[in-house]
Image 1 (cartoon, rainbow, N blue to C red):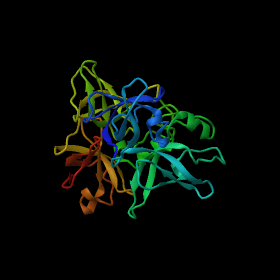
Image 2 (cartoon, rainbow, N blue to C red):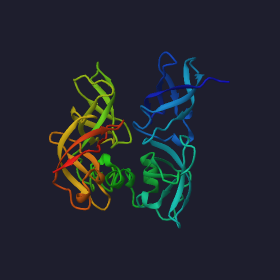
Image 3 (cartoon, rainbow, N blue to C red):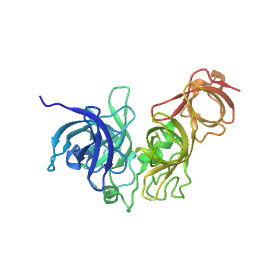
Image 4 (cartoon, rainbow, N blue to C red):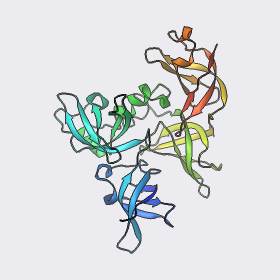
Length: 337
């Protein structure tokens, strides 16, 4: 039986169609081509692949050097996955996405997408989405994006699509990593953050995944971005460090971090103010002085007498738990006053 290897995507140039893998099982970097990717991931762009864990075969290229082949992208909980629309009913308003990273198909609703050209057939279109498991065990897609602007522009009613609702409303209303705001209905396509205005940046928090000390740049993993976030700094950052920063979108659509500072750490106790609280949804966000990113909390943290009232503006002392991608969440035992 052929040996399968595991590794990390070190770099990926979507426009040129090649990249490099690193593996503890093999000395040196291993090149791979677009043709070695799963068919449902052949149009991914930017930093989507970089940092992903993959399994692969080893083959020999025309130049005699080792190349990765038959690449399978693994999916960790909360990751964005690449997939292909298998079925879609415009009349019924839903469809299903298959992904080589998942064991079963994922349902999506028409409302998860921006306005499409009427009568368009989505079958076979390549997408990126975040997947949630429902109580009945079935998979449900959210934050759906087409893998390239070329695909989006072809399908979107009225022209440029950007990243659509998946990266607009979804991050604001459903994901605590977005500080309850979102990037706006236009996504990154029409003017960046908000409803098509200037990209002023958003407070964020993430985890350093790499830093090249000789060149002074690195990448962060952040729950607010489907791809790794570039940063440049003369200060040395070690992988695993939690940092707060301002998340901005460059003119080429890629995310970058500026104004880096030490972030909110797990196990630490902070005092802050309830910035927003959505009574109908049962959660809100706490701002901490001097920190660019807010902290998610569930209403169950509040005393029963306060759970059905407006908590906005109340002071709160709490302990934080930070997820693998840097999102901060208040733990049980918070004190509101």
